[in-house]
Length: 177
Image (cartoon, rainbow, N blue to C red; front, side):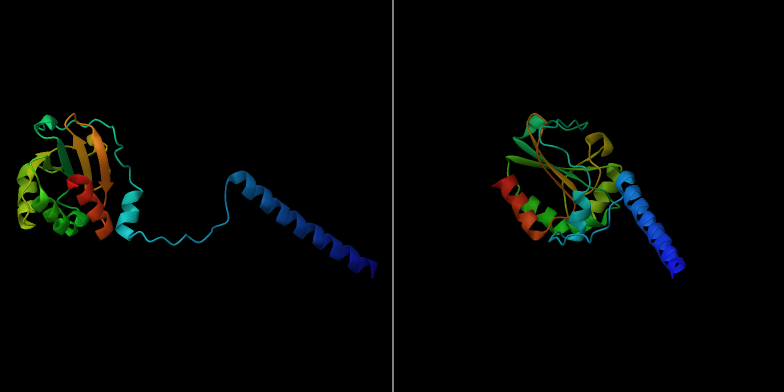
């Protein structure tokens, strides 16, 4: 009977030691127990975009060939011919174009050459002023990205990714409101 108690005590000590080691390793290695992700109302495309870097208000933007002082505000659309979210956003871009005023200039910037960007926009039945520029040098990490820029070349607002209907309405109000 004493022998059985000794074996049981040894097993208990071993199990306790293992549990203690696991706790210590987790606490010191930075590993946390996984928790299920919180539910959000953000559509997947927007959720992915929100993880990308956003050009912060106040950032000055330089794009060769664009004189910001030509209008009070410029809406810069950073697009790519390979971006399916850009293609899916074409109806919203048409709304932007239809509401355009003399106060707001719209310019599409592409990483691809203008001779590739123009047929892309033509296919979507869109016509904007087009320039080519590296998006990285503008601080843009994903397309579509919309930047509202003042006449001094400073970003006042930015939006990244395919916009929900509610977000699109907010953009229209902010740009033309």
